[in-house]
Image 1 (cartoon, rainbow, N blue to C red):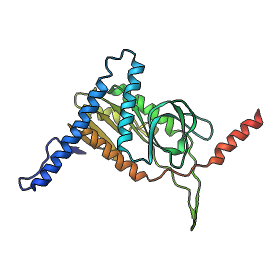
Image 2: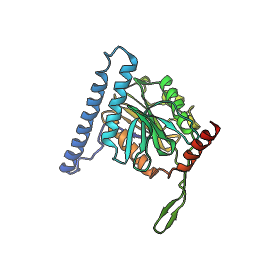
Image 3: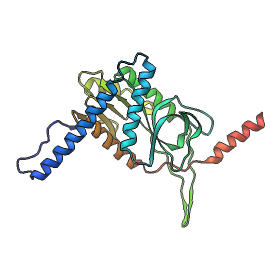
Image 4: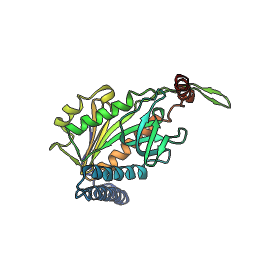
Length: 264
């Protein structure tokens, strides 16, 4: 288990400029976390839970858009495969827009081809057993969709069809329901979620972050003022490791439409 504590752990011989630089980073990102938490809590007086949920979703979407590189598009969406199957509505989807267009966009509602998806997140008021299992079910509704992959032609020949990576799934909330944070009680619940229902990471903006990116049984944890940026940087590193999404087989989508037309 890796844990980032509150202290810096620096020796007295550390160069002053380095001390000042690390203090600046810690303070700056601490303020980002405090600002996000306060902004989300401002939605608490909203009476209708659905409206309050949409406001919180947008706050998390804005943060992801600010921190993720432009190659990653972030939005609320449903996911669609070439057989016409669709996922549940997902609060926050990280997907490719450079090589893969969205489909059937209508106002704020859009469908993202399954091949384009890097990660899916649910945004809830608190990280607890109920919402963790809810996020797991939402993740499974995406992961069980069919994904195609075709070779890519280039000047020197052909790149083989890329293998599909595992889609990341997570849960985002302002607060956490376990007194011990992401400790033993949480971990016993989390470890019961496996396969398509696994949840790879989570964030409580109040000051708790976890992920199992390196090993599904080894937790990387952060508690305190920099949990938000720790979570985002760990996610960035994981996304970077996935590379580019596979090339979509548009003929698979076209053939489904052709078969439907003939049956009609």
